[in-house]
View (cartoon, rainbow, N blue to C red):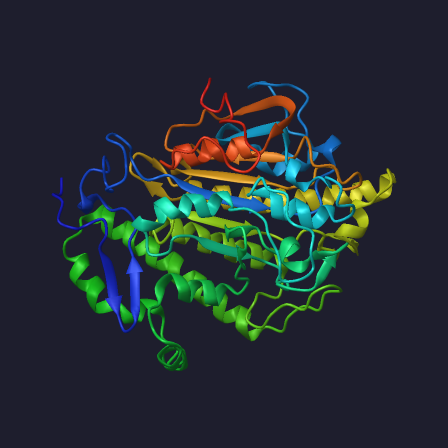
Amino acid sequence: MFGRTISRRQTLRGLGVSLGLPWLEAMGPVTGWAEDTKPGQAAPNRMALLYVPNGKNMVDWTPDAEGTDFDLKPIMKPLAPHKEKMLVLTGLAADGANAHGDGGGDHARALAAFLTGAHPRKTDGTDIRNGISVDQIAASVAGSQTRLPSLEIGCEGGSMSGNCDSGYSCVYSSTMAWKSATQPLPKEVNPKVVFERMFSSLPNAKREQRDARRKSILDFVREDSKDLTGKLGANDARKLDEYFTSLRDIELRIERAAKLPPVETPDYPMPAGVPSTYEEHIRLMADLMVLAFQTDATRVCSFVLANEGSNKSYSFIDVKEGHHELSHHGNNEEKKAKIAKINTFHTTQLAYLLEKLSSVQEGDGTLLDHCMVAYGSGNSDGNRHNHDDLPIILAGGGCGTLSTGRHLKYRNGTPLSNLWVSMLNRMEVNMDRIGDSNGALPGLADS
């Protein structure tokens, strides 16, 4: 048994690089491993918030039975291996996304209200106003313990100005995180930039110099890692090697993506350096999220898989029409079948993320056991543009505070923000309400 010879906060350092470490046995017992964990808690809680646009085909989503004895409907089938690690929540609503006399603009309001519980001001000018998003409330507390207070990522760029939806500024339909009512936080879609933000402290000129030398981030911390390796037992050495291998794999994928030509899509040209396929882009961003949590670079991450109202084509799964176009299916069975394909593609990517989180051992559990992963949309049925009975999943153990493997059905119209209050409380942020909430969401810990 090794004594506590290595600090949990130790990093490997090199030329402009600061590389966090995963939990190792040599850091001592995981109990109380960080200053802000409760006695007996294995690790800090992490919060991941994932958004998909244009709602779902709800008939193929909502389970028939409540409680533990529920079947996964067709578009949730990819999540079968993780059924016991997730809660399906129905009946939740984002009232802030409703018109309230403002007319059209359901897509813009859906994303803007999703994490804030607020009704965004209808404007396509500079006088935008929304609310503070739950991720930023969590970051205001948990962020003091990590290198990055929060991480905002996505797979589709978007303008921060102009009219994108019936008189609503484009910022509303492309931005989920809001630091204040007037300060949106744009997401980063380039994985290389995300990677640099997580690990590099170099100014731009020196970073370019380092890139020109084509060295791995691992090359810059190699000497420091040699000193560390001498202090480790066999299990820790293996774990560190697996961590470095995973890190290098991400670097190589970013390098490959930078050399490939972007795919021309009908609604948005992919930025340079972004993977040429949408699926690889999502998965690379998901891997970076896992890495950020694993190294404790941040404990809060928001991930917009595609902007609200996105008309992205999914020809790679034999759906050539745009997503938004198909979401207005008018009960056409052929269009609904294609929407189901898109919905299934998205849940497949969620399954990928959950598998990656569950593959990382942390203490007596996994990284997934020490996370809360909320996935959903601010639209329910894309054809109706309704914002009640939203498609919401909450996965992960929340450091033992969630009793998963259940379908919980709430009274229709229950504020989605009640879920955010409950998640904040599990992040040691004591709040009674956020946005339109009227309390915490009951039943999440009941068996």
